[in-house]
Every structure is written in C-alpha cells, then in structure tokens.
Length: 263
Image (cartoon, rainbow, N blue to C red):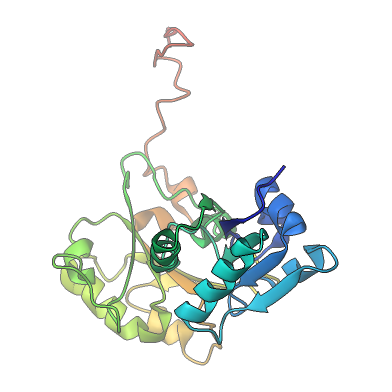
C-alpha cells in the first residue's frame, strides 16, 4: 500500500472527479492529511477522504504554512497528499515546496494528473497536432507579476505559427490578441476560450483573433480558463480536407507491426 511519513504531490485533474487517476483516488482515500488548492480543485474530493483525515484548504495559506503542515505531519508518520489542479508539472508551484521539503530531508513523490489542456481539447473535439497543420503545441502564459525569460514573450512564440495554449491570461485578452498578431498570427486565426474545463460550469467561446474580444465582452469568465489558438482549433477543419491524413493507419505505410499494402 502507500507509505506513511511521506508527501505525495498529486495532480487532481481539471475538475471532473471522474478524471482523477486511479492512483490519485487511492491516495486521497488513504491520506491522513490532505492539503488542496480550494480555489481550483473540485471540493468534492473532501468526500473521498476517510473519516478522521485532516483537510486543509490552501488558498489563504502562505508557502511556509503549507510546508510546515506537511513537515509536521510526516514527522508524525502520517501520509500527506498535497493536491494541485491539473498536472503538477505545469504552473503548479510544486518546485518551491519540494525544495523546502528536500532541505528538511522529507520524502516525497509526484503523481501526474490530467491537465486542463487536454480536458479543453476534448471539449472542443480538437486534436492539437494535425498533420500538415501543426505538429507542435506551445504551453505558456502572458507575462504578469512573474516575468517571462528572454525570448518567451507571446510575440516571440507566435512566430512559430503553431498551436498555442495560454494559461492564466484571459483577463488580459486584448494584450494576448495584440501580441499574437504582432508575432505573425493572421487575424482570422481560430481561437477558443475554455473556462472551467470539465466542470459543470464549463463555458466555451469560439472565434478568431479578429473578433474574440467582442465575443467575450459581457461574459462572466472565471480566471481558471485557457486561451487556445491556431489552425488546428478550426471547428470545421475535419470537414475542410485541409489537414493531411496521419500515416499511422495508412495502408501504404509500413512499421514494425504491419507491412505496407498496395493501394
């Protein structure tokens, strides 16, 4: 089973509790202490905890408080689950937590989860990588209080003309649009905004760089939303015939498990 006296950083998925991994669910049910980002993670996870588990909501807590709770619990031999929305590898602030845990010699493990990027793509019925259209996906955010490294401004990334997904950027949509166009995306480039992907309150707004700002006006969009941009987001692309077929299932394409066949 699970180890006592250990911290698990667990990806809680995009919101829908059915998108938790089996491992995430097992750890939540086994945890003695659960700390979760209540502003983003579905509060329904509290019902999964066993009776007697201590649950802390971290939205009002500072880093040192969170780490202090984890350290104290581990030193008492308890199993700690620290839940982060989506996958811990993306914009999760896990780095500074695990750094402090390592300084104190605390054992921890990271458990991946389903990112909101993929929940949003599923909602849009979109494949973010289409042959002949886009074979690269850029995951980024608009510069804010956290500065961007050199050459990672939105306008710099836009020159690649690939699929781009922006986290935490919807409140400054006009800046996003201007930088994307400045970087080279045509105004007619498809855009989709997905708020609360996979939640009951999920909202989707589609448009182009030319009209998405007008379409968003008056809508009450929560901050945990994504801006997805690129030709692969065109809702009619599966009917247009623009994208090439994948070679994976092409009869003329041979690989280790299937010989090529004559057309």
